[in-house]
Amino acid sequence: MKTLRLWDFIAFSDNWLDCDTSTLDEISPSWFDRRETLQKNSQEYDDFITKLKRRHAIETGIIERMYDLDKGVTETLINEGFLGALISHNDTNIPKQSLLNHLQDHLDAVDFIFDVVKENRHLTKGFICDLHYLVTRHQEFAEGRDQFGNKTKIPLIKGKFKERENNPTREDGTVILYCPPEHVDAEMDKLIVIYDELTKKKVNPLIVATWVHHAFTTIHPFQDGNGRVVRLIASLIFIKNNYFPITVLREEAKVKYIEALELADNGEPQKLISYFAEIQKRNIEEALNIKEVSSNSLVEVTNIFKLKLETKQKERKQKYEKQLSERRMQVFNYCERFLNEYINKLQNDFDENVKFSIIASNPEETEEQHYYYRQIVNYAKKHNYFFNRSLPKAYLKFKIELFDNKKYELGITIHHYGYDDSVIAIGAFLEYKDIAIEDDKDTTIPLDIRPHVISIKDDVESKEKNIRIHLENILTATIAQVASEI
Image (cartoon, rainbow, N blue to C red):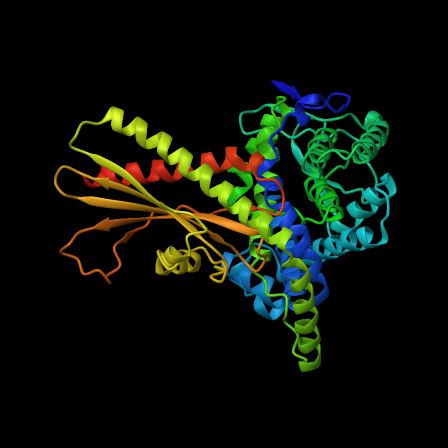
């Protein structure tokens, strides 16, 4: 029998500190400011958080194979709440009432961690055991093995650490060995001590939450329910630091989550860090498009409007405007420099049969602000965000002219994203140019490249690496598309 022991006495190693957290860091400053405003004024934001909680409650049970639930019904339950009338017999693989019981247990557990954050309670073993009891409240059995190694169901101990080994078998027959029961109590003490030390040292919360998640999974302190509990603990750490709960979607569980965990088991935590950053950024981008004024009361709306005007007058001081302007220009310069480097390489690689050129307009060229307006509006609609048209934008037009008079224009635009004026997006669209086609006819060729969204509230130099990666992805998709049409 092949075995693999994932657990060793836990410790925090420096390779975690070497991980790249820039995906989340580059948008966080604007989000933290925006979050304060939304919390004060926006009912829409409250609804957004409620839906995030419901999504977590549903998806966490699906990836643990506790139940299946139709995707369409999932969205209905997220929007409307956990109502039995919304679920039919064919929507799930377990009795409806059992499903509702599990969903409510998971939702109560998510609410519990939000309450713990409000009360500023410390992470303790008692709290972790309380969390386990909540998520397993309606689960009576766990999967185990008898003395002959056969699968069997054993009574689940709720709210207490395991009393027997819980070593699952992979599809290839490998038995995974977690922390033995006799070491669990001490290891959980150590996990909490290390967490407190990392917090005091102000280690990046993305690293802290991901490390705690991974360390907990190697201990596997409960007989069952470890995945549900650890995602809640990681969520608690993120919420304490003004982020969102971690929700692993069913379609991402195997291809992103499990693979990243296995790499972390082998001492390579970057992919797990990047995946958790991706989840957070996805939620932030959605939240940045929430309107802050969503009250139905005329008096309340008037007061918010007045307060916002006063706040904006303070923010619009010369220093603030100058900083935003300078940082917009920095981002533009990064993009222009990269494209010029690339075009020089292309001109050396190709003969005179292909002509490449760049036309650029920086954010300060007011006469060019109308250019690509329609394309940006359509691009923003496609990717479901608000394009702030009142603020300066820039573009770079990458032109490709082929020997047979085929012409393509790659438009790369730098424009403002969402309702906070310190957030910008770098978007892209490819257009086929032909004089036989009417000018007002849409000739856009879909590239399926999502915008790269960053904050310019703080220094943008650290964001150059990810900007370059985004531009490389844009050019890769563009050249592949043009090549496919030759």
